Length: 504
Image: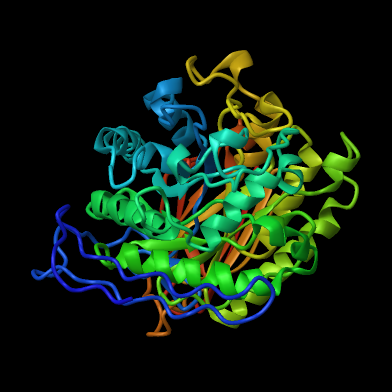
């Protein structure tokens, strides 16, 4: 049902009810209830560091922004990256290698340990990590992360009070195998998608909305937070078998309304920050198309993953990963174009297989996308090989020497445009040669960038130990020789600019 206006006891707007759930195989999800609003309107918000404009990420100057970096998710209580030593040294290391974003894990069990209780000490710890990253010009996407729904099933995510199993047994065979075989885990997902009541009589999705409302209210004034990712890898529960065919019913009648519900909770306190939402879990690995509908928010991003399935079937092999990437990125582009939303590759990697990682990187360049590689650290309870996934093996130690996977860093730390005075048209990097082209058109369609408008390109030193040369058509280099941030100013009559960076 609809919520009345005005503050609740916690000082936040009352939330509208979740729409009635459709049947397991047919029917249409009911409309979500309207949310309340604060009598004095929005307070304490800031302009978002990135927002959506005509299918692109843009900043306050109208430049197209590309976010590339790493995931950092600490999946063990207390769910705080700082508890595992992640901090200043790591932010400096990331910035020194050209990265400008971290997808930072936030865990439901950490935020809402009891029904109706928000742990603000937990949010303060996350905020401290955000501030450290911000000092190095690294933006943060807050990722409400889960694997296997809850710690009870060998993963992380929901607090114990939000786990309903229907008395069914749990069969645990590790990640990701537990997903299809555990009756208790799949019942817990079904209960969540059905908005079954928690022990306090409030629906599970309602609680999730209350939790996200509190998180957004806490971070709405933080200039380093680029956005909020609603849920990592949503699993379809007992309907997961349908995901082999893309799961049109689950995507359209359960997942899309869920996103609308949570976005409404976020927007009740923060009208500005970008929201990120994902397809169902199997989109990026089988691969299968998504049947998500359009979410009800103009400042939203399609966040998807790419994991080449052959690396699991044939360890050490990257056979077919290029083909697999073409299909996943193709399906992502289909959704993005249909709904005029930007995309972001929010996970890939989780392996030492450089061929598989490269397939994701090439796909990102070909499709002009930003990304966040999995993962910065190897401390991961839901990984087939935690050490293999790590860029830095132990965040309690400095990221130097044997504590860094240097081969992986060399692959990930590639040149890329960070802020573009125009619209990108092509990116490639191969054997120490980077090429990039863009037009001077503004993404919002309001005209063109004027003469001298600058574009900033990260040029990590690892690929250019003796420096680099730059060839430009339609523009002029405005940065110092061999600067880690190459800037190009457009010439007065140029409608397009082409750049070639060559290793000396």
